[in-house]
Length: 326
Ligand SMILES: [Zn+2]
Image (tube, rainbow, N blue to C red; front, side):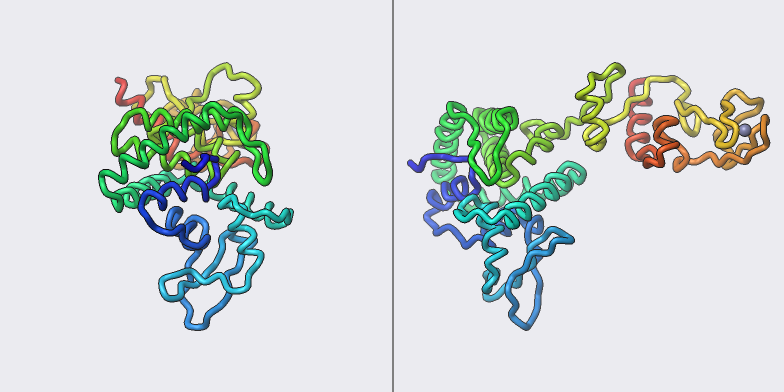
């Protein structure tokens, strides 16, 4: 058996080996397994070479007779080579472009669950193209391979080194799913191996937000967080959710304390204050304070520093969850 490595080309070659097909060319391979995520397929009558766009961090390529056309673009070829894990030359520019693609994809898969679900569906569809015997064979190859990966240290070789912690969690997720010995387990394990080999260290973000079955497990923000979790929240707020445990659920904005934008007075305690009003005139200074979702900030500091207001969807879910607990 091929020695297993956490490289996209290696993992996918097991699939094609079992299926009895040749490994597709790089552009087709990437588009087949990560549709729309890496390559923007363009329809054009004029045949143009593939190109990488630094702005949208996508490769743009045209389909010609069923296959994506690379043309003479050595840049795209080098970037693909890095993502697939076969490139030998060490162009730093291409390595960085590949990293930009990895970061963009990780961000999209963390913040847009629908994209993750589409990817799962695609992997499932790919496995459905195999016979039952071929699936069993692939399951065995992956089981052996994952066991071998578990005995190795993470591969620190360039271009995209993996931290040991990310590596171990990835291999564990794949092993966990394979050990279920089920159809779902096989395609989920497969997808973890694909994501790990494509995204490398960037896959760490997915590991924090999805469990091995790709069910989102965003972390609840703790009351007394450690510095590392506080900083993690600052840098990756989308991986956290809010919780509301107060009991004023009849209000329009349960749990929200309103302060006057002008004099800082605590409005909730002013006589007759009602958060269903669109505007509340401060009884202390007369300033007209709008009362709406867009005016709600997590804390005074966020408001002062011009950060984004509270995410309405996150807030809504926290309130819904509190209502359900009642
Ligand atoms: Zn005021």
